[in-house]
Image 1 (cartoon, rainbow, N blue to C red):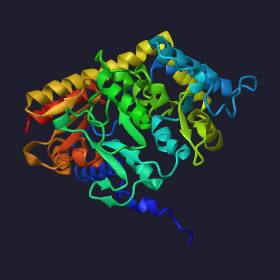
Image 2 (cartoon, one colour):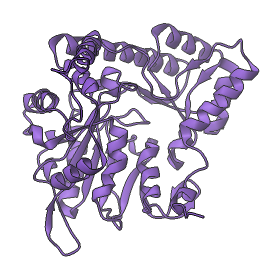
Image 3 (cartoon, one colour):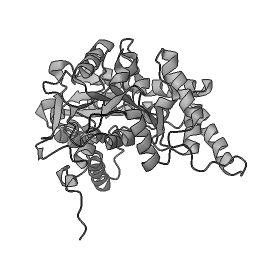
Image 4 (cartoon, one colour):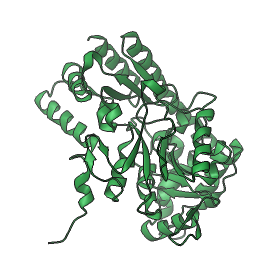
Length: 407
């Protein structure tokens, strides 16, 4: 029989959100009359902005005409979108990022999981704890995780983020080669200031580390001292790759489009000590393994940068942030210990009465018909916490808060 990748056997039995879905399905089948309010998985609920929908219609019409039909597109993405991103997301913020440093993909999750294709197998990896599971699981699949003991893998360096450090990652005691950072953070909802992020850039430059910076929630930032891009920090281009997505910004969770920035000055070394451009390697990887995001989805993303599109997506962002405000104030008023919800759509809450994460998940589901995400699914430091999302309607959010006041 064909041999399989043994590293998959080192993963938890099921993906976190699959287990959440299983428990919810089982509960709903037994309690069909209960109105479930879903505040668990970070999927958006508002429709695509009108500008993007209209752009998709026009793009679909293009595909119906021989004169305007688009087949295989450039693996790096169409220039009409790369140019817009370089202009609006970087150059207008005073950041020197060019279009040829931007690679369009089908979402940040894919690129975050795939970027290690161009890095050596023996690089050591550091992640925060709690952490977005994809960072850990993809490295375990690739053979860099090692055996699993409890909630940790022996080959990965874990950086705790908890109440003691105000949920902001501190520099590691052991040097890693690659560091995953996410700000605003998923799952805690907290964000790093310029000063805090500057420490990481200085550390990476001194220790010759690479930072993989997940900026999927950038559009939710409201605090003046929280950078929208890691490249706002001097020296970041020499040590960091940035990943962004249109999923949470413009509702593209089903449309699929995002991008990765790999600066041309970012370098690595091969086994013989030769200096190699990571931009060139990533381009080579994409040309081999990826045929590019669809023409239709890229036209939809381009429309996000139109005056109408920008206005419409910010209205949606503010809609979700009003939910976050409602949740934050209501939960705090009910006596729950919480963080987040200021620069992100996530609320990170301490479970009451010493409940475990899964016990509180089951309690909320069975008692109140509310679905959250158990913090333990994000790592050992997440035990005793639950993540709630603001991606629902005002009405459902208000009802959920009313239910939770009835302890």
